Image (tube, rainbow, N blue to C red; front, side):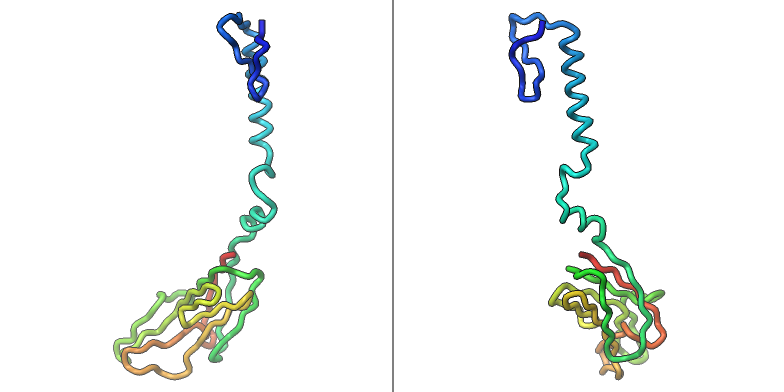
Amino acid sequence: MPTSHKTGLGLNAWVGSDCPMRQDFVDDNTLLDELISTHINNQEQHLSAADRALLESGIVIGRYTGDGAASKKIALEIQPKFVMVFMMMNPAVLYDQGKNYSLVCSGFALAGISSGAVALSGSTLTVYQSASEPSAGGQKNNLNAKGSSYFYAVFR
């Protein structure tokens, strides 16, 4: 015979004088199965609409071809918190031993903070190309070289 004592989930909370029967356990297991199955199958319960939007579109990958101008502005689909830009098929930085300077082929930016070759303002990404050779030991921005291909990863 089931107890009159119940838990918050409606399960039996037997006391020492109760004589539980098999059906009591079956009923408790059925109730637990229904509650857990409903919870597991509820796709909306743990994430807000804003959280879900971030997960569904949190990263945007894009590419562009350099035009050789001193700077190039790229309109982004989202307003990111962080962006990375890389020249395709090149390391992040190349050192030219003969000219004694570094060629910067990558860049990173946060809103308001940049690595020098890349800037981020709202949903606009700006990349820079140095027009002249730097002095010995300097660096040359190389993120808009004419005809070169680049890719970027933008994080919401």
